[in-house]
Length: 173
Image (tube, rainbow, N blue to C red):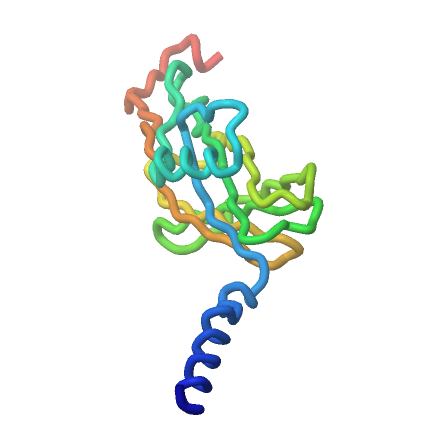
């Protein structure tokens, strides 16, 4: 082999083992929302396979309660590219149907083991703070730095009013 071939082969192997630009960016995460029951005792790999298969971007509201008392329940699964190295993170919700509007307060999630790369958290989005048929954006922050975003929709039934007004004498007293 010539010297040029050796130099090209050496530089190609260095490029193959060089860290990617994304890895140098720091902490990031993938967000999954699941409304199916997650089986217990799954490994991290099996959990990620399950949420990839059953993840959704359209949350359906609970049924069985009156419309005004319904909510959207789901599991939030976060898959980080490296250990979080923090004891807490925040989940912020924005309504992006018309314009971006913060739906507060933020959800604070405390992390049991900061060396974990996968986190599962139960979400219960209740009315009137969250409204049906709205497009939402979920933003995850660690130490005030945004690490993930996910857009989803809240699918549900609006509260209906009959439109009838009763001015009976009993109500006036």
